[in-house]
Length: 146
Image (cartoon, rainbow, N blue to C red; front, side):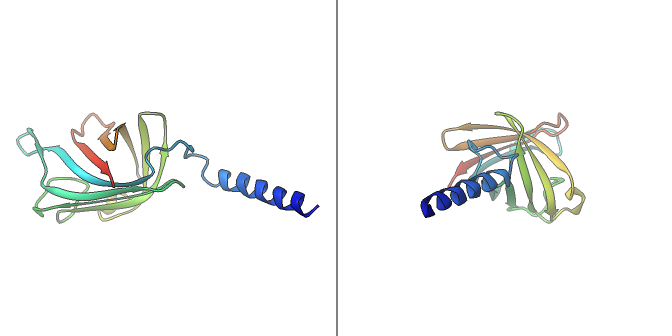
C-alpha cells in the first residue's frame, strides 16, 4: 500500500514538473552555457566586420535566458549595448527547429525591456549560430558550448 502511494506521488510530481514550463520542449538543445566565439555586425560604412568582444549566453531548461557581451571598445554602435556592454535576461521559447523568441524582462538598454526578440538559430556540433529575423538587422553571433 505504501509503495502505491509513493509511486502516485512520484508520478504526480513528474506531471506537475513537466507542466511548469510547457513552452520549452524536453529535447531543448539550447539549454546550457555558451561562450562567445564571434560577433559579426555592420560598421558605420555598412561593411560587415568582426567585433572585438567577449560574452556568454545562458539558457536554462525551464525557459530562462541571460546574455552578456562586453565590447573591448566602449564606443560600439550596437543598439543592444550601452557603454560597450550588453546585458539582458528574460525567458525564451523555442518556436521550431530553427527559431526561438527571447522575451526581455530586464536589460541594460531599457528600451528593450518587454520586447520579444525573434531569433534564427542553428546548432552544429558544439556551435550555436544566432541571427535576427529582422531583415534590417545584419548581425551574426557564433557561440560555443562550455
